[in-house]
Image (cartoon, rainbow, N blue to C red; front, side, top):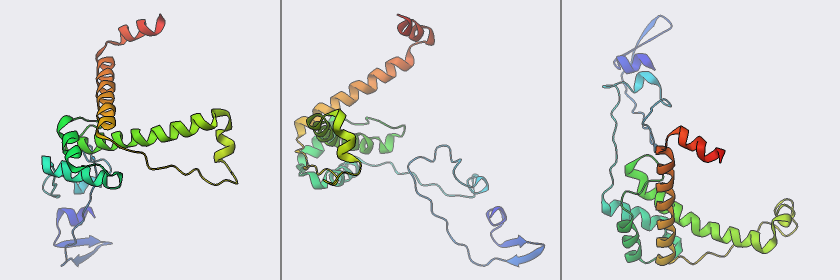
Length: 182
């Protein structure tokens, strides 16, 4: 593999020189190749690999978010409002995919509410009997109603959580120790 990356016109294998006529592209997709440790090192050196990064436009973000909420009966104008209300919010470390992660987290929060209602209705002490080897089968959940108001509320909560995490990370270790020791 390293030989073909260095000189794609020939391949040296087991002391036999083999001419290599065909070049086969290797296509790798993923969310985070910032470290690139998961790829074969000789292939990722500059000049041996072409890297294409996607920086979605506002329209791209709106289109992907429409796909995320496709089954939830959210109006298109509500999705546009949601994307515009929380530009650049990140629950990951990459700006180009952060909107999608943020919107996915909002959607997950609404579904988490349904799970919470199920657990509260059944009781924590009965959860394992209901879920493990139950004769009733797996629980069935109704599709929750998603409204712009509920998504905006959860969006603001996520933003506040993110700010709290940033604030705690910026505090010095000494002040964190003082908080724990009190």
